[in-house]
Image: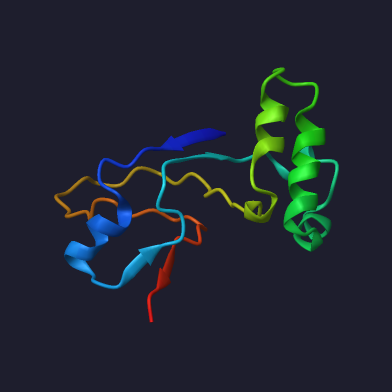
Length: 121
């Protein structure tokens, strides 16, 4: 998985309007990547992946993608090794549809493990 994030307004500037003193760890535009698959698709058990440090996780991702699309592995290799992390993801079991009704949803909520803020003290 690859994704890019381009900010219209610098994050620290935007945050200052609502939360003075809040500073983002990564205030510049960036590209993010993730290697996602089912447990049995990886040659290393979850317990061993969890024990790897960030640079070793990145190196494993490079090795696992070496014979994929030619430009993919080099992009992963160029990433900051300190920013790689292991995250266990689970999927939900499908359930039967329920009767629809009117609900209110909060927009912009996401479940992500991203270390993105620090405080100016």
